[in-house]
Length: 117
Image 1 (cartoon, rainbow, N blue to C red):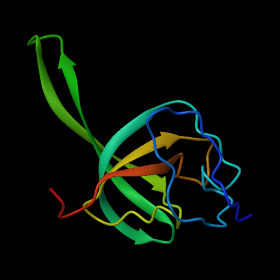
Image 2 (image 1 turned 180 degrees about the vertical axis):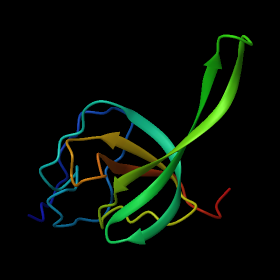
Image 3 (image 1 turned 90 degrees about the horizontal axis):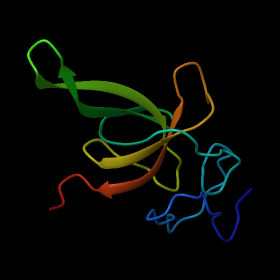
């Protein structure tokens, strides 16, 4: 389903990728709708086929000590070929319907490539 023009995913401030792809699970060129959470994280593993592991850092409030602590979680996200995020890239991911047993997010774009300043 390689479209000449990527479709609007309804999230302001996100630029569509320059390349086109024929992946049905791509939010820009496929049939997947983005709804729910929009998170930011760093790709820590990119060894699976079209799937990456994203580390999402966040703060958790501890009521007893009235302080925040740092926590993180690893999220599996679908990586379309038109975006093709690598390890070390800072990415924006969006929640979708379940794409597989463990994948419920899709990479929307790359904020910063690994090695760039």
